[in-house]
Length: 124
Image (cartoon, rainbow, N blue to C red; front, side):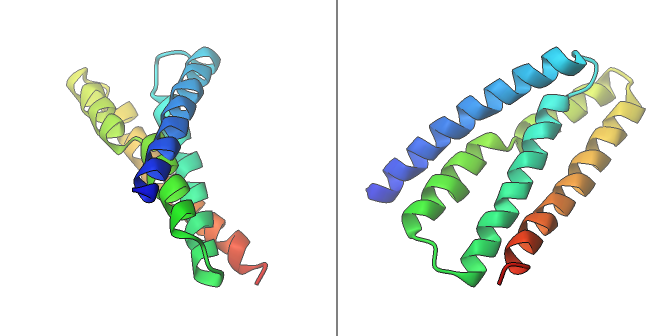
């Protein structure tokens, strides 16, 4: 039951963070490209790399994993939104933007997981 509460708390923090980051990106860049989704996926990927790396080099409590790894990052990152936005771009005939969205999310997020892990591993 305790882990469930940590997942819920992390999920609330992640969902609120996702909403605020999406609004910020919309204000900064406008509605022409889903920068909000890209931003939360990049940020979430980086922190997932950090959490994974920390788990490999030290003991992380199940509560921390539930709070951050499952709850916060699960609510923050948005693969279902990414998929829907990409499909909408395709349906609207914006093939270049759709391809760019897929490439940026995939490449940058994989790279950010790697960077997050490397930050932890370089300190060990």
